[in-house]
Length: 89
Image (cartoon, rainbow, N blue to C red; front, side, top):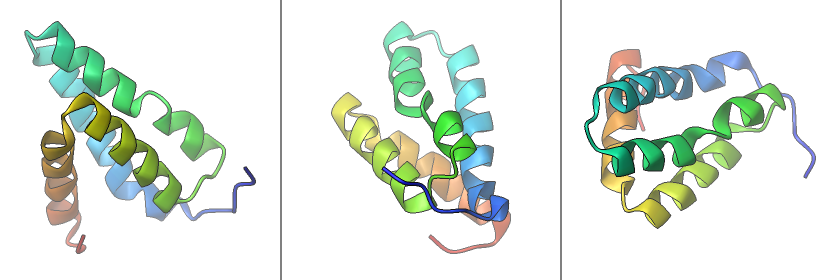
């Protein structure tokens, strides 16, 4: 799959959510929650490094979060990121 060049500002909310995810993984007492979040987000930095577009990254996150049953939690994290940035979903 060829990746198109992407402006780094496009990743602003994804980077913010990654920070939130790292905190969630660190503070949770649930190993299964930590493992699910790690699986959902572990390819994201590599995809960003390879300049995948936000649409492709979000599709990966959505597919994996649905598989792990944590879609609502991931959506809430992105809502927080978008509110903080002042941009709309």
